[in-house]
Amino acid sequence: MFASVRGMVTSVGTSSVVVESGGIGYEILVPAGVALGTVAGAEAHFHTVLIPREDEWLLFGFSDAESKQLFSVLRSVSGVGPKTALAVLSTLSTAEIDDAVAAGYADRFTSVPGIGAKTASLIVVSLTGKLPKSSNHDVVDVISALTGLGWTQSDASEAARSVVAEMPSATLAERIRLALGRLGPS
Image 1 (cartoon, rainbow, N blue to C red):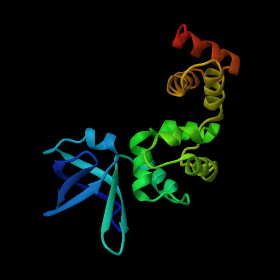
Image 2 (tube, rainbow, N blue to C red; image 1 turned 90 degrees about the horizontal axis):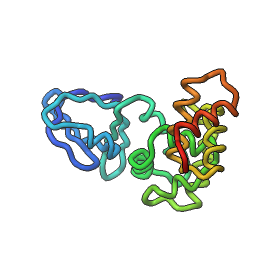
Image 3 (cartoon, rainbow, N blue to C red; image 1 turned 90 degrees about the vertical axis):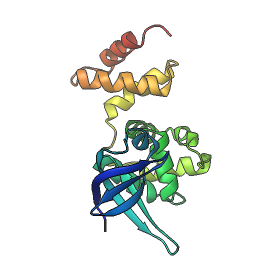
């Protein structure tokens, strides 16, 4: 119903913003990172999803179409409602979600408030092959190698993404060697 909202931001909270457009103030629930990056008094544009309920209508907003699509995919998982899906997007970046699903790291989702081990495993199983821009297997291979050598998931993910982007035709061994060089001694 409301695919997007553009207007002047009148207030910003920790997980919501109010955008005035056409004389109407829309309260939009947003991921924490989006709220932090939004400034009251500035114009903003949000890709939105309206979820009507019996007792209230909730409007969720995202800074880009990919995050909006990921929100919808997360909501398709049994036991994951809109507020839990928003919590996932507030806690993990899109790249971290892609990597966790592609590599089968269900424990990454247990860092999200309200998600236990069972739901985390269900998210990984349900989202495999369904993500908007499914993770590049080359990146996952490098991440797996680096985490197997003791690097953290976030450090490995950052190094792997930059190496694969920089060297798209390199072998796995070359990518791992370059990533290790960037990460330095452990």
